[in-house]
Length: 251
Ligand code: SAH
Image 1: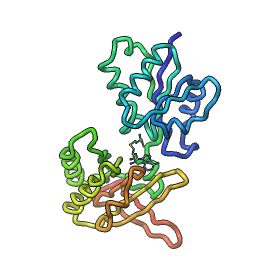
Image 2: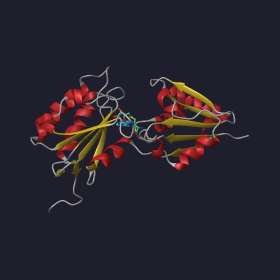
Image 3: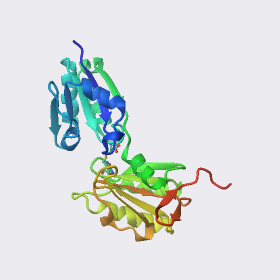
Image 4: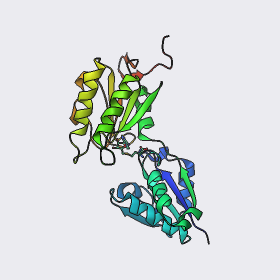
């Protein structure tokens, strides 16, 4: 019997943000593979094997999933958020590209999820309401000079920016460097949103002017959104402030 492989997004944390399509796939799976904390979000049931692994073994995990699917299993690879955003979908396709010809015969689907950037933006209003870009601030898989170049060009193009992986214990300096670059070229007090553990019980959201943003405001569970020069704040009595970027630009 032919197996299949579905690479699915579990959303940012809250179970109501897992799409029905993903829930349906999980109900039919025989094997779930992924980083431990994401696999832990899948309910155990008879006939379902859970394979949690450490974060650093993405390519091994992808190969394992492909091999299990080839052997006739119904395999799900889980990512948080969306599987195509700095996550497992690209890792699986990297493995397919260099792997044995038989892996190209496997039925593979990518099922989207709500990515952290969109969940974070929704909590404060519409900071990504006009053109924006996304940058992964981790230099694990690319040199820092590329990150710096992209940051500078994104500011020059006046994009709002959403930063994934802003800071980790092994890279305590990266977000500090990014903030220095932003402050040296932006010369304004555009809002910066720190959205931590969005949609989980640990969620915290803070909005500060760029000049007051400090490196320790971010960690590995934080999504950082930096406004464009057009991004505005609406203050409201006894309600949280709204951050939005207007859809149009004055000519
Ligand atoms: N595929 C994921 C992103 C993986 S990269 C997605 O689409 O969301 C991991 C980074 O995503 C974290 O360092 C953090 O910046 C961000 N992130 C993931 N879940 C988050 C959440 N619930 N709240 C805030 N940021 C989150």
